[in-house]
Image (tube, rainbow, N blue to C red; front, side, top):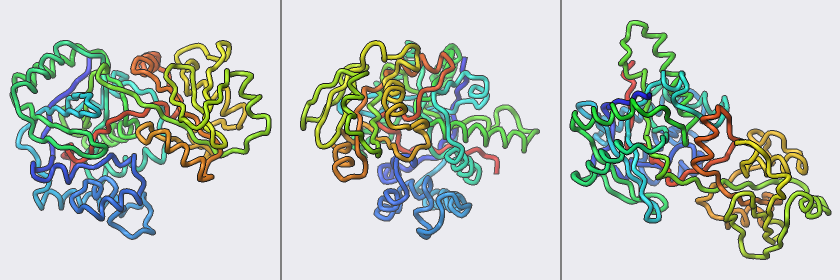
Length: 413
């Protein structure tokens, strides 16, 4: 079972919600965020990436950045752009992209469920990224960005959510980045809140879809607060963290493509042909339509690759396409052993399209690119259930949850 509960969200007033809502801090670099922040003083990026309000020579990890985030959070509330709800509630967050809706439950989940393994992960985290969010949560005393969790679809939850949406108007309803529609409903009926809370007590596990660093950071700050306040009750806000829970059958994983900057051997195509059936496609971008197939862009041409059966890999990890590419190409042919840290490889989310791969290679920034067939949601859940870890940069979820629509106050300062 897992524990969820309502909370008093700090959220924007209706008239400024669209202006406050921003892309997540981790899909933008500082300069991209600075451009958006300079154009919009209400952008939540002033809180989630507060270095944009400091001198350009200030490190994004300097303590002054986190202090600025805390002061900006207070200022947004002083100006009425953000306000804290009077009572604990649950919320529904629906995103619609290309006509496909997904509806999640905005709630607080328990740090103890993560510690016990009831909230399961499928990726490793990097210490420097984890430390950044630990400092951010610690200094702001808040979870400022939601963690994107999923679960195996439950009929009771679906019925309650659908009924609430059919009978109530959303409090926010707007289009934002990438033409995605965002709708929010407040669930303020105590009986409905109890029904949903009890329904999740029968759900055996939640799974991190996106936000492993945020989860680790939120949990570590919560455990730190617990040690600092031993007299606090088990219901203290710092024992919980901000999450949005989506049924897995509503989610879609997009391709997470690779670009590589390595010398290309004269006989490279012959080397590839020992493990893949190779077809030269030409100028038309090759988007894999089935597992075990890959697109490859090299010297202005696209190739279709299909791995030969004996090199397809066995098991939940080795059989993933991202593993096949690493095991059969990146490591043996390019010497890339650790794709998390090797600066010769980079990753391009599928939302940017395959034209982005062509541009990066044609501009000389990289020598070769690979388009990927994405893992499925079943792949992700199977990996997490097996206690395994996916290779880095395996999954790219769209649409992205916007930041700034909900903040969870840890109430420990």
